[in-house]
Image 1 (cartoon, rainbow over the protein chains, first blue to last red):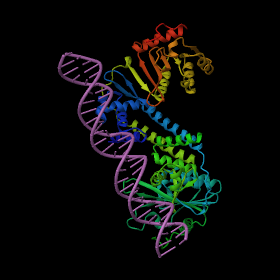
Image 2 (cartoon, rainbow over the protein chains, first blue to last red; image 1 turned 45 degrees about the vertical axis):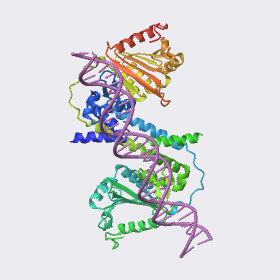
Image 3 (spheres, each protein chain N blue to C red; image 1 turned 30 degrees about the horizontal axis):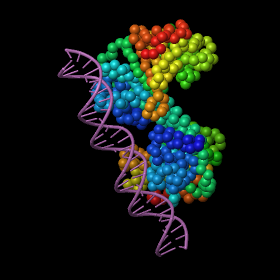
Length: 276
Length: 276
DNA sequence: AGGTATTGTGATTAAGTGAGTGAACTGCCG
DNA sequence: CGGCAGTTCACTCACTTAATCACAATACCT
């Protein structure tokens, strides 16, 4: 069972790393047995025997498989560590090439933009939101209020960033949607004030069909905010994190959140404005 | 000129990292200007305006772009470092997942193989060959003869491995195809014996149409060998390294190379068997 | 307010790639 | 020489992606 899932996951990961289906399946089949002929591979994977050869050739050129040109040909996979390191270094090299290529791009000469004071930007995907959160935390000088609505968000990295902010004199205040999460956070950050949000609608929406879940709420120096939530994508059932962030003291969104945060901080009673 | 190539290279690299053509082009266009509308992007890239939106959405979900939902929408790319790090960590994570997934595979229970004494395996691609070379060098216990036919092969990593072998008591002998390369190697490895191969046909083939170039020739403990060469692939004009390695004292290939190496070592006169 | 240009969404077609299948060729065996 | 396994090649089908178009929505101008 676990092995089955390991196998399938390996195949999926290999495909995400650029291999085709047949290539991935052939490699996994070969990795399981020390060596094998095309027939063997075709049996343990579900690759048509006649196409094993193509797949192996590609794998060989990527340094993942070696071939013995006997009759029948015998193939063998390199060790797992070798294979993984090969793939990894391939991609690391590509990203580094990309870094220098992008760095060498000439900017288009365009009139420089309007001031960024009243904008609201939307981002999506865990990656980008985490990155933007980090950037905002690092830019804080006075005050930093962060409400965590989902334990998956609360990473070691985040703990470090908050602690660093605290140490450079920023007034760090964190909140959680429920007591359980609050305790967990307080344990990790003993020197920082952690509260349970008084805003009831944060933890669960009062609207019936609404199954979004607030995951982060960040207010920096009372002039920049970030809000993100998990939404159930109906297509595939994976959750996807979406968010917005805005900047500027008089930015409408910022103003609202500032007010909201103050409400949640000052009292445990929830504002009547439960809906909308 | 250089900028043009940077741009094209960026696009190509982004595609190799899993982005589609439109996505890559849109990102590069956006990276060059701080911000832009769909129209702007469509102009500086060659992406049809109406398809920019799709591309941006994907980029956004990967954390590479942020969107301002005004009218017209304005997009902006995250910083280059942020983008590259995001992509990099995505792939590093995948490779690590792969490592554990592959590690958890159950081996198929198959009768264990015939002894590996007389086999010849072929490998291809710089990656795999370098890796196999390293493995062979690390496994040497008595003697190690290495002829380097191409300066690209002679890396710092290789120097380290040879030095390590030397220090654990292996008799390391290296050779080069010409005096220039010999000097370079000798400089890096003063404590190791470096000779110029007496085998003339190593550096250039006596056959007319043959533009392959020997790149490495390795003999380990007189019982394992590796030979590799660069071949001009006629399809695209990139060079591709191909090689074979074999094991077993009485393996035919090993025997031949052993003899050959001895010839090259003992004398500067080339054996009459220049061809074939 | 009406008309026009611009912006955004969706549908549709064309082209390319990869999965799946089978025929033909090779060499090996009796 | 015929049969058989191994290998290669050519082809079809399905799916993804590139490319174009039609139309709706919105802002802008007069």
